[in-house]
Length: 446
Image 1 (spheres, rainbow, N blue to C red):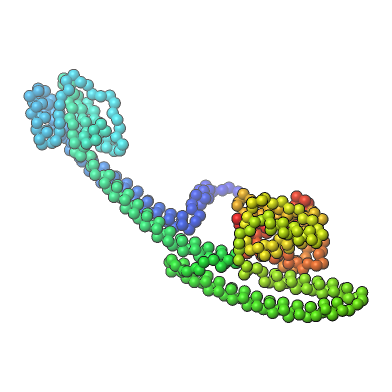
Image 2: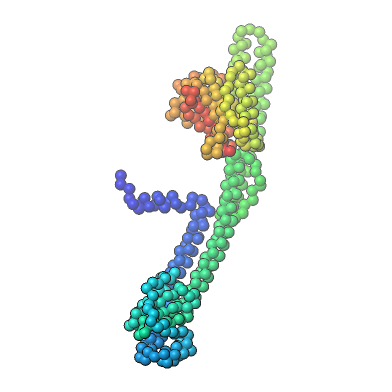
């Protein structure tokens, strides 16, 4: 497939353009102003300044030609004195003869090449004799030398007689206006972008379950409308969460009361058949706990700074009390900001899932190059096929072909872990473990 050059340039340009709203808005305003100022400057120098400079250079060249021709008509010291006096009084020219001298062979170019070009064209059109000039030696004067009999006529003329010397003032005014407009644009755009950034921060904090500081809409009308819409949406979601929490509390109470009565009745009964019934009740209670935990979440819990090592050591001790071993690899000083109970529940689910299907389980923590903190659970079990990774996160999913069925589970462990991780602004990543089984990694922002 042949790629068109236009598309290549478009891609390169797209990569170079700012990606933030702040940068793009500034580019939209500042770039046209800069282009307009450059166009005005070019038009000024091209259509006005060079024209005025050419006229002045032609006038000075005419005066120089008059002085040279008057001297050549009578090349005597007396005539030169008369010509110099008239030129000084009427034309502001200083004329002197350098006997036996010759024209210089080198000339320093002016910063603006147009000055030299204009002066050279004017002198060349008016003088038949060889000449030389310098516009850089004296800041306020132009040095013109013409070959004459017996030496060189040196003519010193004021600079403003040859060039329009006020062009820099126009450039300074133009540059000052550009700077002022750019400053106003930066302040205005920054204020508008800041309103959008605050809205984004409030939305991100709400998505992580954090209360944060009160958010007050401000900025442009459209931004304030979006902020009010966000506040209304947040209030509706919070009402729904409160209603769901109250409903789940009632359901939990209503279900646990008969379960407790059944357990008491079975405890007073003897017989082998009651063991199976107690096992069924335990499974029912565990299933109810899983359902409620998945539906309730940990949204109301505040975030706090956590030392990772004590957190993982506490999980390992809990596993050890159950008669299993959990390997730990974690740095001493690693810290994160998270909701403790929610994160502990997510890791417990991943650990329980690994213990149910493997003999060796390892819990590790590290800081990635991206700045994220990764809490990983590795096992040596049968693992999950890569194409089934996403299906494993679906609620109530049971991947029996890939892993031995856990009769106690209901398929909510990974779903709860992902929900907790995303509630912290992170994610749960499944991969092949170095131990040969599954690697479930919780990645959280630092």
